[in-house]
Image (cartoon, rainbow, N blue to C red; front, side):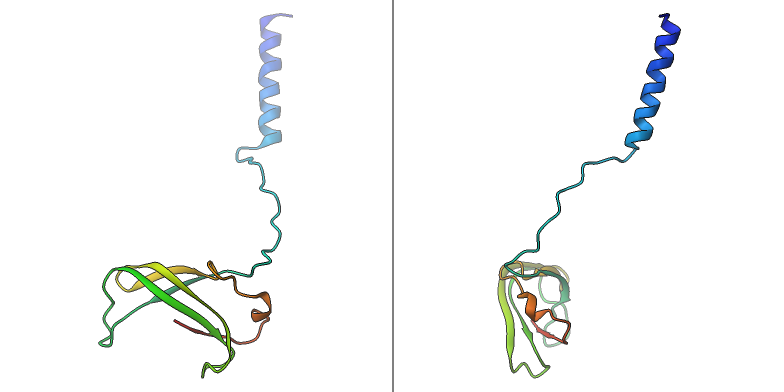
Length: 115
């Protein structure tokens, strides 16, 4: 075979490979089983002092609790998270990260969060 034929075969092979694989092809991660320990929920909040001003920046220990009604009669779940970073009063955390939220608590009923 001549060089020209070999080059044409090589170019055609590269094009076919690129079309087959695609530009953003990546291996897919394996399917994850639901965590039997409980659910997690992302949560963003804001802390202010009694005057309505953002609290000082820094890490805080925060207690989160879910109740079945606004009066907070029946505690359904709670956890304490230490070291939650607060900046200009704002924070972001993952509820259930330490103590997973039981799946039966998240059954579609209204819930109230206390921070």
